[in-house]
Length: 519
Image 1 (cartoon, one colour):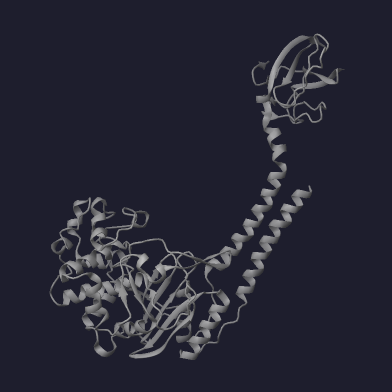
Image 2 (image 1 turned 90 degrees about the vertical axis):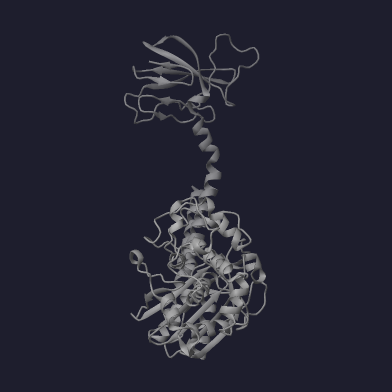
């Protein structure tokens, strides 16, 4: 009973802890709504970091062709302060950069978006003849028919080059007919990047530097092949039990789909260009990239997705996740705001970058800031409470393990000894234990004595086990609910310090031991 109370109190403490911490988070104070400015952004970020324990982030906010604010907050996994010039992995925001490179080639009439990929990249083959119909446009719009279901790339060994990444697709089937369904799949953009590399005749990273990053003034931006090539090898943080924990990033191949590394300063230049300010990028290219394909209702364009804010305003957005970082880029066409956020917490830590972005959009649209926190902060605390509860139950289980083990010994520990003459007009069956509780004759024991220690058996009338004999006390009897009370036992004699117990059959219901059944 005491152990049950300990387990219950331990579990209750864990649950109350989770409830208390969740309530504390819900009551957190956040900045008031107002115009987006450098001071408002700084206040919001300081409050968010304090509420959530976010280790580090970069933020870039623009309006039209003006930079509102660029800044870094917190620190990297290596302990260095994050500034507006700190390079951070953009994860899947990289897709919009790769799409721009392809669209520039199309604008220069070096490729056609509606031509088959194999026209420019013969090495692109799959274990499906329909792959020959995949067009360049379908790669960028993620409607090629390739899917994580048919080719789970992250479960495979990571290649080191774009050529090797494309080569891995030779054994992959398609999940659907090309052009009929949108399925988000990183290899679409690995193929697109390899196409750029082959058509341009230079390594993809060099082409991006000369034709995408350079013309936009993004001099601190580059693209890499794998996560091992990221700053600090991609190390960041995850959340566990309400805490942030540093961890390394596994090796993934990311070029084309998630390989761009950039700074807050450079992201501000990118947002201004994508908003169409300054005429840096042709309007035709921007419209093609930012318009949804509409395939089967898809809102995905080419590295951008169409949507609406909570206030109903049009919104263009793309998110990105690594295991150790997440990111969001957002354009608000009506207000001409652009927002880019990168944090060093990853995909299993909650959407810090998206929550920060949504908070800033609330300010833009004049709504009170909600003060939201990553879902893992509450989920992890509930998990912690359940873990404490499981610990209490585990303690109880260890304490009662011996008792449960003895209960399970059952018929397998019993064997028939012999039948004796009838007693009171009924058959009499003696059982002896096979286990360590067996009573042994003293040296020179009485001849003919039937020595047993009843452990447990099963009444076949109700299929229930009887209680174990403890301290050699007679307790071998069917459960009280057993119909007909098939068997009863009585103490017979006491010889040489041993109990002699007779099990007397009172009805014709069956009773089973390990080796024999009597009826």
